[in-house]
Length: 95
Image (tube, rainbow, N blue to C red; front, side, top):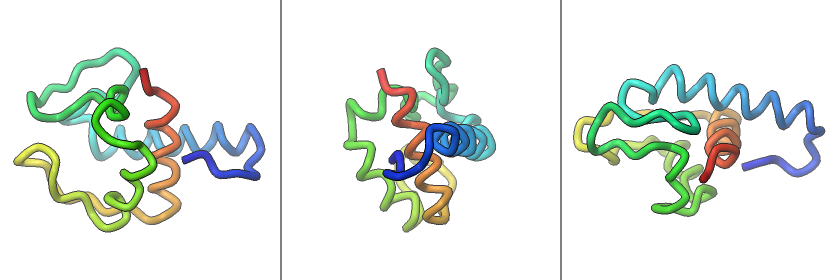
């Protein structure tokens, strides 16, 4: 979710922040990059999420707390700023 009005450098920082968040919270199960595979069989690669969901719709799930996904996925709750960064990162790597 690139935020309108952010300068290119701010957009880059937002994407980098989102990548750091998914590295800290999601990499154990999900492929989070442009080519890596998910280690968990039920965890989709982030680069292909747009094939399953509208990416902008994931924002509400992050803010409310994702508790579904793969059966053993831990609960994850993000602030609105973190959510915008995660969505911006995920959008940046879609196939």
